[in-house]
Image 1 (cartoon, rainbow, N blue to C red):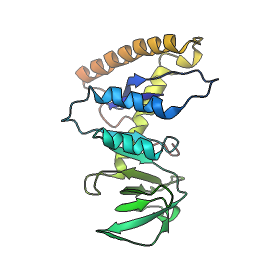
Image 2: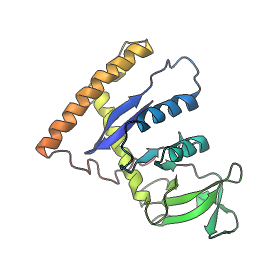
Image 3: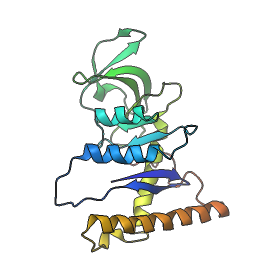
Image 4: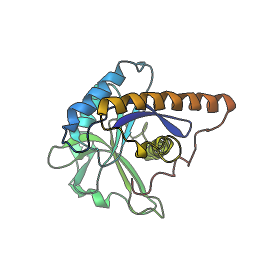
Amino acid sequence: MSLNVLYRGSGIPVAWKIVKASQKHPWKPLWQDLLRRLSGVVPESVRVWVLADRGLYACWLYEEIVALGWHPLLRINSQGYYQVRSGETLADWQPLEQVVRVGESFSQPVRCFRQNPLDCTLLARWDEDYKDPWLLLSDASPQSASAAFYGFRSWTEAAYRDLKSDGFNWQRTRLTHPHRAECLWLAMGEKGRGGERERGRKGEGEPGRGGARERGRND
């Protein structure tokens, strides 16, 4: 598990935790620790968007990000219901799977989920040739947030390719001790940062590597 800063079409690992795959672990305290460690070094003047795919969504994760002064942009599944909010008035519950059709987008303040309801902004977008729409939750207003922002999450996939088949071949490691593996990630992360700085000096790797709407068709 890792947090990456997106830069010039890729992602730079800045915080990570490696655990043994053969053992069960409580994910909540691990993610909370990573987020809080990073919060101490991010300048307050920087507006931070935290993107995560639908396999990571949890109400506590959304609230943790907001508590740090950052903006969550978390993808959710289409099961469940939402209510459009207009001032203090809430409309009838509607199924999330019907928010948008192909070619449509949506951005409104809502109350999401009947159980554990969350007051937030619901952003949705369904482009042609894509199997599923993006359904995203954020604390930012509809005027300052866009579903298109989620397209940048594909950049972090580029970072994992750099660590694996396109670069360090991490998938072939024989390390079994988590702490030693984390030390190796530190070395790989430093190497990756050096490569990004070099590309930056040369003017290479401009935003758009894969495009903001390469957008992982099903991620």
